[in-house]
Image (cartoon, rainbow, N blue to C red; front, side, top):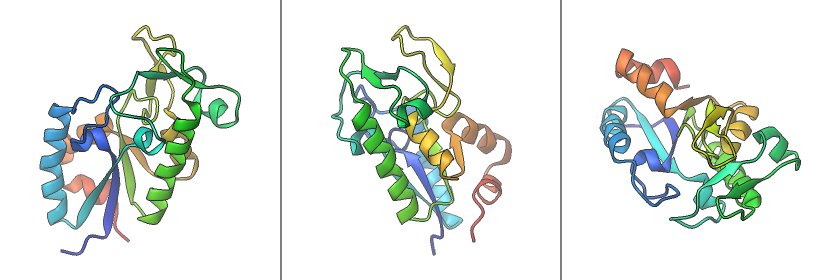
Length: 177
């Protein structure tokens, strides 16, 4: 089958051990692997990618949180720090730019990112205080990709569409040229 619908997905959602704690997001990765098989039959393929690893961060690594919004960070007016107060801003910026390159290189139809991640969150990220609280906002990679015009869905949004529409979700959300 010719694959012309390419979708970039957060590596942790695809079952790669790239989350900050080195754990596999087993429940969601199992669901997404089932979706991958159905998508392939429809001519879609997924490209798993982790911005934080692409930015040079190890796995496992200390959790990190944005200290201001993603736009400020990209404009050099804020930073991202780990729980040990290490500045990892440059790693996150590099990872976001590498993700953008991969999206352009493969001409992706869309992107599915892990909600709540400091890189990939679409609607919610952690507060920056390491207190477990969520605030409205985008992760750095999500912000950069949305600014560049890529169509982005959080894992939560995509799975809601999937539950409601099944396989028809691909053509609706990621129309092939």
